[in-house]
Length: 221
Ligand code: DX5
Ligand code: ZN
Image 1 (tube, protein in one colour):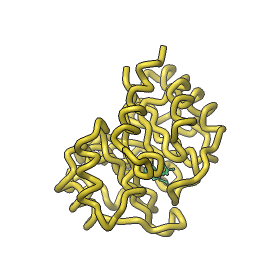
Image 2 (image 1 turned 90 degrees about the vertical axis):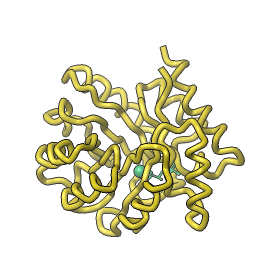
Image 3 (image 1 turned 60 degrees about the vertical axis):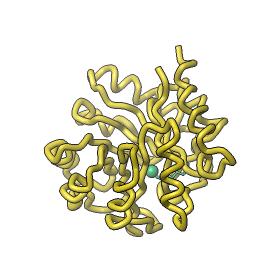
Image 4 (image 1 turned 180 degrees about the vertical axis):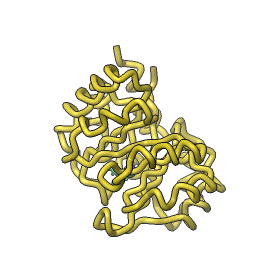
């Protein structure tokens, strides 16, 4: 099985968005990861709906939208209208996570739940059967280009066990500091979807890096 790869647009050259998205369109990437930040849930502001809508018009890859915002449930309808494939919300930002997951599904999208590095996977025990993907943050969210937090590897293994026990079909996505050193270790630990920003867009040949990340899964036993 190959790994799914979702390059993070946050690391793209925003002065040349069309060129960067064309590059992803021509690559073996599976999805396009879009990071929405509100300056409140995280200490940074990225982009919002006007940009997402423009990206959707030119992207041939399904949009994997990661909301790092408070009250993400307010934006479910608009995200669905935009045509996103996956809407990922933070557990820490949702008081009524079960309801939010159902609303995302009712709106016709796949539902992802993200956990900050300090949030234990056990908190998802009672919703795991309902979610399509769990995003483990391997850096503190807010910025690209940060150093990978090693504890994520043990967390991936704990989440793998929890998913098996609950009969869930959830994919495991890891986001932050994914590069040539950390990606093979993550895939061996059981990750299904790799998000990578600076490692992909900072490369001389991003397409080759994406291909390399995809083929890591083939080595998995
Ligand atoms: C961080 C974002 C990530 C970011 C990853 O808060 O959620 O998606 O773009 O960037 P890299 O791969 O550079 O760590
Ligand atoms: Zn992200």
